[in-house]
Length: 190
Image (cartoon, helix red, strand yellow):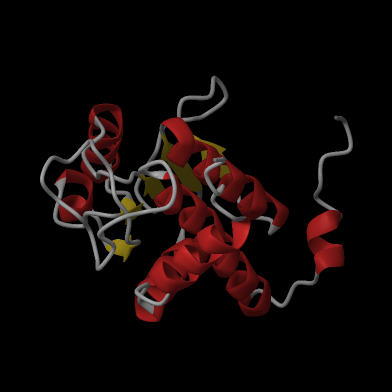
């Protein structure tokens, strides 16, 4: 007998359930930091880093001066800048060090994480908590999610991407920009 495959709609249902736990005020707090920042630095590792990298690209499309941490052209972070860190565990060593560096330079820090009580979240000026599961933090399950139909971590990464995109929609409204404005900044050398 062939086992029934997980359906795409099961994943979407899981994401919809988890999305209901995201606090809208937390999104607004990060959006406020973005609008106020001189420059924006975005960091993340692994699959969470891919979602964060996509967000940095959209921030550039919105006209912000943005850098992805670790790229050769990324300058030093300074007072008045903002570091946004995507980290499911909130304890990824390199991202913790980046957060410490940003704070020591007088920059603000925002994070998207499952565990705001962990190292990065405890240093952040604004936190967006996204429910999910990971083996990186033993014995902890964030939010109401007890099981997942996906590999652990996937729900967090997917919902991070959607959360970043939701903030882009808000920032488009806040900055009075249209898709046409964003597309004008789209890469033309690919």
